[in-house]
Image (cartoon, rainbow, N blue to C red; front, side, top):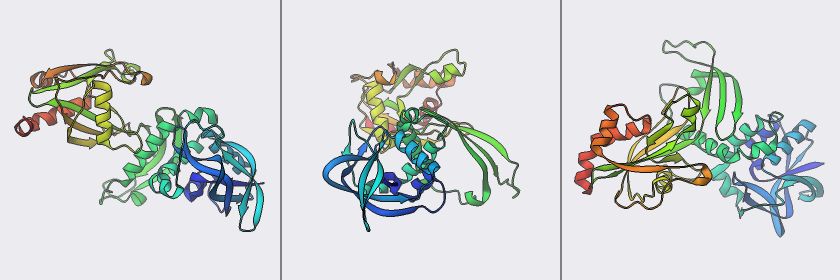
Amino acid sequence: MDVFVAGALCLPEVREAVLGAGDIDAVPATLPDHRLMLCGPAAHPALVWQEGDRVDGLCLRGLTEPQRAALTYYHRCFRQRATSLAAETGTGTCEVVAFRDDAPEDGTPVSLAEWVQEWGAVAARMAAEIMAYHSRKPAEEMTKSLAPMRRRATAWCAARARPADPAHDLARDVVVHAHKREYVNFFAMEEMDLQHRKFDGSMGPVMNRGVALVGEAAVLLPYDPARDCVLLIEQFRAAIYIAGEAAPWTWEPPAGLIDPGETPEQAARREAKEEAGLDVPHLERVGSLYPSSGSSGEYIHIFCGLADLSVIEGGGGVPSEGEDIRSKVISFQELMAGVDDCTFQDMPLVTAALWLARHRDRLRAEFC
């Protein structure tokens, strides 16, 4: 039986990630009494029954059993199940297998063309990561990883969109011999066997390297120029505890991962409100950088936020995210003493503090 697909699978790059390279007999088709809706944690278009509506898609013919199994796995990761329906093609009506969400917990109607323009590249990146775990991890477990996977895919696409280095041609100067995805959950681990061109012009040896993939994050150091003080938060950090740190409660600025579709500035303000109870009307960009380029792909946007630190309402973090946070306000002199004494363990805090030391006089002159 033919298979009807819609949504992300209308994109050739997504179909290739799921079904493999090669020609697929794909015929334009329409499925009556259905609509596309953004559903689930990954906000992907899903087929949902809706009397009187119609969804344009593709009818895939002549698929092999492994290809059918791959399609089933991909759809089940998005909580979509197979059902037999009748689709319309240019040659008439035919019975097809279609995958749909029969119990959407939420959802909004979506235009595929508009969704593809904004999220098509992200969907292709997600499809490649999902299918790397086919036959290795149950689809139901992958469902739990879709939201952070979408965040990582968004960050990957943003990295690819940044200006290239004119001194290096990635297509010529980096050769990937193997790409392995070894772990996926809230974070992900990937490995590559690769070579890169050396400064003498020759290719270096094949080496194995791994990376922890997180996404992009926003950091905001709140500063009150009138009172010449900053706000810091303290919380338990499991990562450094796992690494063996004897003092895993750290003082740091409010920070958090950027959600797909959110700007760094929006994320910084959201985190300041959630973690410190602050409204921050003015942001100063400190920098955007990789804090540990030898092992992590996390890319952080650091800001200094000008705020009235005499008015703090709420904060403390989001309990559903396991956050238990307290805050304190310290003087600029105390902040710099902590930097000089090597008291602080958080690199973005030290980076923001040193930036503030360079720009403090200007900020006080402009905003006091």
